[in-house]
Amino acid sequence: MMFSLPDNLDLSLVKLSDGGLCQVELMPNAAPVSVGKMYVWTVQLVTAAGAPVAQADIAISSGMPQHGHGLPTAPQVTKNLGDGRYQIEGVKFNMGGWWTFKLDVNGTTGNDAVTFNLVL
Image (cartoon, rainbow, N blue to C red; front, side, top):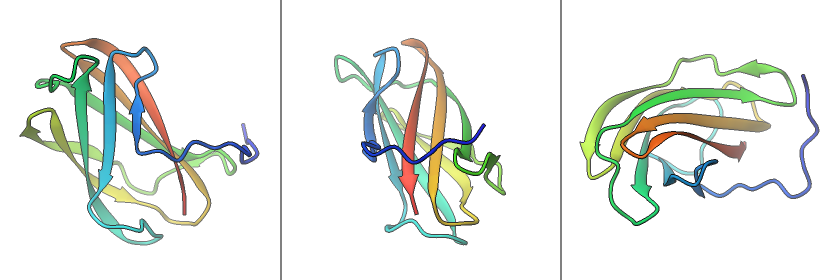
């Protein structure tokens, strides 16, 4: 299914998860994020009360809603950095446009998800 770019697209890299269980911050290791480069990102999870989510399993999916395909790579969490921070490796975008970056989080707060929008 293909979608048009919304006029009010939220490009924030800090969001409350869909179920409101945690606040999530996505931090690329370099900015601006561009096409063709491999990135290592950090994600930080804190509870609604501000406590770090120390032991979380995070599944990552990404795609281009306007084109109907995903990343050419398979990003994954490679390290728990402590204090609710997790390292994600293998992030590479192969073309410009609107990308979604979804994190499914299973942690001490429960199961939740958050989707970030990126425009390259």
